[in-house]
Image (cartoon, rainbow, N blue to C red):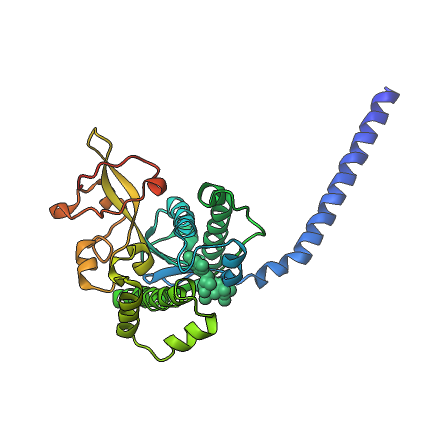
Length: 312
Ligand SMILES: Nc1nc2c(ncn2[C@@H]2O[C@H](COP(=O)(O)OP(=O)(O)OP(=O)(O)O)[C@@H](O)[C@H]2O)c(=O)[nH]1
Ligand SMILES: [Mg+2]
Ligand SMILES: [Mg+2]
C-alpha cells in the first residue's frame, strides 16, 4: 500500500514537473514567436511571367583556372545545359530555358503556383539545384580536369507582365551572345592564330562593327562566321518536345536542346505552345500540330537516350 502511494506521488510529481516545464517552454515560445512576423510575404503577383536567371560568379577566373577552350568550350557549355536540364526536370512549370556563356534563364509559365509563387523559395531552389547539378555532373563532361574550387552562381528573379516583354528579354540575352561571341571569336583568332598580344588584338577590334569582324574572320582566317556551331552563335534553348524514341516509334516528351534564332517571329510560330495556348497537362497528351520540324540538334548525351532522326 505504502509502496503504491509512493509510486503515485512520484508519478504525480513527474507529471506536474512536466506540465510546469511545458508551460515554461510554451511561454518562452510565445515570447519569441513574434520574430516570425519579421519574415515577409514575398509571393509573386499572379499572371506574370517569372524568369529566374543564374550566372556564374567570377567565371572569367573560373574558366582560366579550369582551362576552358577559347572562346567557347563545348564541354563546359554542355555541362551548363546538363545542369539546366536537371532544373527543368524538377520544375515541370518551366516551359523554356535559355543558356549562354556562364548564365541560364528559366521561364516559368504565367499560371504557375509552385511554392505558392514564393520568390525566395523559388530562387534559392533553382540556384542551388543548378549549382549542385553543375558540380555533380562535372566529371561526366570535363574529363580529367579536376574541379579546383567550388563554383557558385548568383540568381535573380525578374517578372515580365506581357508576352512581348518576355520575348524582348530573351532576345536581349540572345543578342548578347551574338555580340560577345563575334567579338571573342575575332579576338582569340587574332591572339591564338595571328600571334597578336591581347592588347594588340583589342586595339585592332576597337571601333569595329559586326560586318568588319565578319570580314576579318573570313579574309584573315578563312572562317565563315555563320558556319560556326549554332550553340556558340545562338546559345541553347531547352524546350519540352515530343520526340520519337528508338525504333519502336514511341513518342515521348523530352527536354530537347535547340539552337534557333528566338529573336525572329518564326521561332514563336514554330513553337506556338509556348505563348498563350499552353495549358498545364494539355500539351502532355497532344500531338504536335502540322508535324513541325523536330530540331536536328538533339544532344544524345543530354537527353541520355537514343533518338530516332524522324520528326515527331
Ligand atoms: N574560355 C572560355 N571562357 C568562358 C566560356 N564561357 C564563359 N567564359 C568566361 O566567363 C565569363 C562570363 O562573363 P561574366 O558573367 O560577365 O563575368 P564573370 O567573370 O563571371 O563575373 P560575374 O558574373 O560578375 O561574377 C566570360 O567573360 C568568359 O571569361 C567559355 O566557353 N570559354
Ligand atoms: Mg558570371
Ligand atoms: Mg555571365
